[in-house]
Length: 221
Image 1 (tube, rainbow, N blue to C red):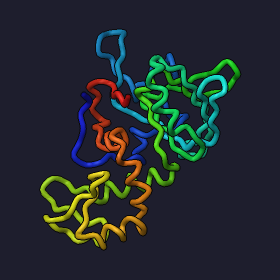
Image 2 (cartoon, helix red, strand yellow):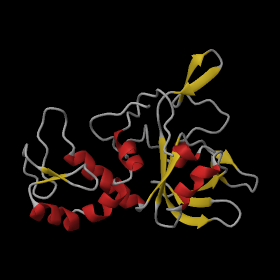
Image 3 (cartoon, helix red, strand yellow):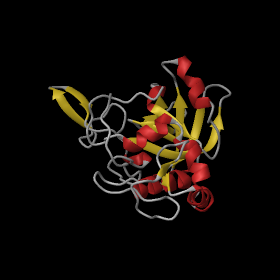
């Protein structure tokens, strides 16, 4: 099982969350992403994840997406699943406005001349039911309210530091003084929207993955 960390990873760290054009190209060596383990055989140097908001979604021939990365550049994502049983997990959230997360993304040239990502290992792919802006906001809130070891948690509603806060019963990641504070965060800090996404164990996992240490590829199936 890949290593995790105690505090969340920022999704705006471009070493681990590159733009589409900064992902390594298929069948080409890139020292930023690969390292020689045995002479002539490369392995991943780290974990990386391409995020993009879905702007087109089509399932007529095969699942195919057009997404937009943080720079605003469009890229194609086509699914050629090596495990058909895992495909329904992605199709549940396969719609415009959601955000796709592709681990170990490689740029690929398709026969129709488009450039994008060919996904075969669907267990390295996740669709989050939030737009890209909300995904980044959810991530920043989690970073802000997840303390370093040895420090007190802060209430997500009023920001008071206390050792006796109540945990959110749904996502289990945010804490509150009382119901009033929880209601405040639910509406004013969009926790109603973020909590639903964070209930997914895969969404929680991708926040706490140790991206700098690659000890095996992840599996989100």
